Amino acid sequence: MNGSTKSERSDSDSAAPMGQGATWDMERVAAAIGALNQAPVKFELAQDVSQGGVLLALPALLSNGLLRHTGLYFKLPPGFYGIESIFLLLALMALARIKSIEQLRYSAPGEWGKLLGLDRVPEVRTLRAKMKLLCAGDEQKAEDEGPVQRWGAKLAEEWMADTPAGTGLFYIDGHVRVYHGSEAQLPRRYVAREKLCLRGTTDYWINALDGQPFFLVSQAVDPGMLTVLREQIVPRLEMLIPQSLPNADLNPDKKHPRFTIVFDREGYSPQFFLDMRQRQIAVLTYHKFSGEDWPKEEFFPSNVRLANGEQCQMQLAERGVRLSDKLWLREVRKLSESGHQTSILSTNDALELEAVAASMFARWNQENFFKYMREHYNLDRLVEHGTEEIPGTTRVINPRWREKDGQARKEIGQLQRQMAFFGSMGLEGPLDDAEEYARKKGQLQQDIVERQQNVDKLKAERKLLPRHITVAELPEKDRFERLRSTRKYFVDTLKMIAYRAETAMVGILREKQARADDTRALLREIYATEADLQPDLEARTLTVRLHHLATHAHDEILQKLCTELTATETIFPGTDLRVIYKLGSS
Image 1 (tube, rainbow, N blue to C red):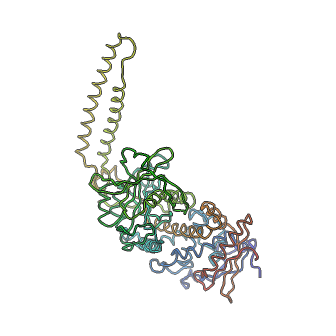
Image 2: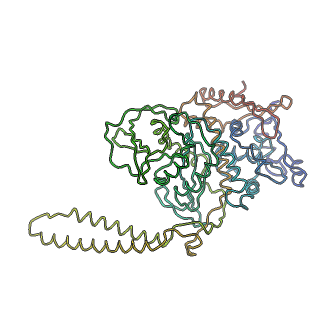
Image 3: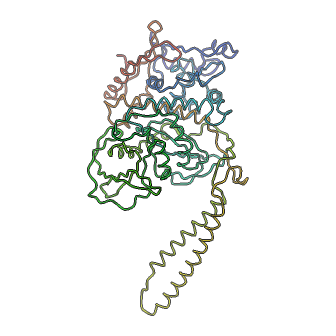
């Protein structure tokens, strides 16, 4: 049997009396009257199913925990669509680059249903209603106590436990999710990629050495990286990470930290470095006040192995340095071909010199992760509308202090320009102009004195005002709300699983394609490829037969991927069918 063609399915789906693609009449009636807990997963013979190649990601999705804990943390009332189908649909949508739930309207529901073993996928409003039910527990509980948060924490714990030896490094950086709506008056923050101050929320992401995400911490009111590190990220890492992580790059003669956190200059604080050392946590960051350049004779060529496995040579040097709080730590510098020296600080005494440099510069993997997620997974998409109150005890910048600080900064800037101009003034022309020169310079000096007095006054007034106050103390006109975040966190966690699954597939293809960007582009082509579905109930198999790609070279890579994935002997969720992947009619 060849199975139904796309044209035949299109005709039958459009003629379905219960809606486009809703061809399972009996099951849908049973679900409507409460006689069905969820629709059974049943595959049918089908040819040329749209985007059938996305099913190749199933083994990677399941191995990254997509359905491992859904029964523990989530519940749905009886209905046609079960939890496993909803989770699997959302993850496959992310990989197929359907970047929002609303975009599902423009995909044939019956074709997507065939990929899940159903007659069709839910409508957008039904899918939103299911998500609301799944996230309802979090909306009724305090932050970090609901099922969505606990599910994300459990996955992060497992991902960290599976971290390969030699990587006890965690990269931390903030990503501003810009908000262009009018529903909420969010605080402004600087967005580096747009070089503007825009309204939005800040998400602090914790990633692995290769850029793979573990978890995120969202801040409607951003108190700064240092505060978030102290109060939220470090305590959570201490709970999730075992007492010690093996590291192949560590010197066995020196004391190993539990783990190392890597961040940029925003988290620079000698006191924080000391506090972390006392908790057996190492830090790795750029030196904020590096001082004078070191003599070039101190630098020597070093072979550095980058995060992607490549070897390169860097000019490196190392010294011990004492910071303002008397803390001694390592300072490693890299000399570029232009003569610029990049200074790195670390309290990890056991990490080799080359590993310090490689680990710090691998921070760009996290920047690349943000860029890729924005472009391909619509990371900044607003998932749900609505706002919620910010706790009254949340500390924010005092608007009166900010206004006075702005006035003082403006005056200081003008004072500095006047002083620079005063210092550069010189007598030019004949001696007859000396009197005019003295008059102008005297007037400028008087202006400088007056402006200095004004600066001192503004500074004194600013000092009398508290820099931070609580939200409850804000004037009514200055108060703001935060966007609802539960469903956003839920979708972000699913996108993390999808990205990790895609990355795992990239790892399989590394032998055939060295460049990760090329491999990811090929995977996107595979996900969009049509496939034939051939279930065999007697043999308990489901064969996903993919169509050929554009070139023979890509076909060879796809054949390797099919062989590797078939060897996992993955069982399709909700069935006893073992999935077999094949290319073409071979």
